[in-house]
Length: 102
Image (cartoon, rainbow, N blue to C red):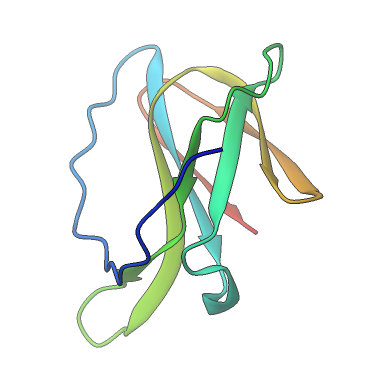
């Protein structure tokens, strides 16, 4: 278990390094999940506490805000995501960003 300070964070634009065998994933959520942590693991691995938080993110000029978690530096392959008892599977491809609506 680890602690996080309860602070208000709005994520800033991200620069991702993508390559032949490295990708990223963006998980879009509702505002109800703002600040919640989504865990990730390779489908053949164990849950080790790797996670990222859902944050408010600017959606672009005139588009308001969206809520999303960003996972970057992922080796191409299948991953399991979980938040509490809810889970999803994603397939990450090298050189691209996989998007998922939670």
